[in-house]
Amino acid sequence: MKALQLTNYLNLIFNKNILKKIGIIFCLYFSILNTNGENNTIKHDTISEYDYWNYGMTFNIQVGAWIPIGNLKKTFKTNPSISFKISTPISKKLRIEFGSTINVPLNSEPFEYFDKEESFFVKSKNTINGTLGVWVSHENKLTKKYLLNKYFGIGVGFIQTDKKKLNSKKENDNWYSVETINFNFGFAFRKVAFKKRPIGIFIEYNFTPYQIFKNVKKDFGNSSLNTGISYRF
Image (cartoon, rainbow, N blue to C red):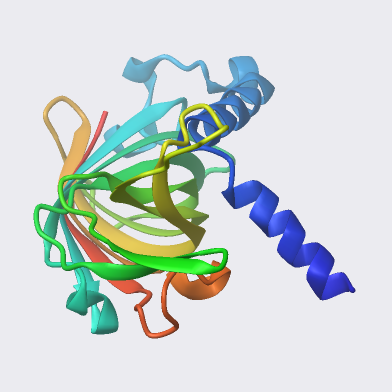
């Protein structure tokens, strides 16, 4: 019985449309920002370059490639990706981040989609795939100019297909999609430059069990990498 209740609860979460998920993420962020309040206000000219980025809200942009691993390579190829994250400190070395990673499949193979008692083949070419989530980041100062970030995140992974729903009763839910939970962890190596704005490279691993809600086959695949350039301001 408990397993059935958990499944129903997860279905309720993942059946919500993507715009609502984005709204929830940013509401959570601003509630945390308000909690920090004036504690995050500090004069930048009174602290070091490294400590400058331990205070207040920052934005992080990551541009690079999304790379499927294992069985996921049977459906997708390497595609361009971009991430937007907003973060705020929760301690001297820890930050909490909210945001999204988007990749655009420029090429994909057809895959079988299961909806209730029927199945059909769909593609994800020229649509939007990615994740929405929350991350916890730990930052180490290696030298005066160089920083190492280690982070872990959890959120929602999604694949949008090219097949439109004929009789959708939900607003902003007109296309068949695959949604599931996403776990990821990664590293970012940055140098403080451009007027105290760190820039560098990153790599992260994603575990996204797309088959969990039985919209795709069990051997569809669930692993991928993101790598590229990271810039924080």
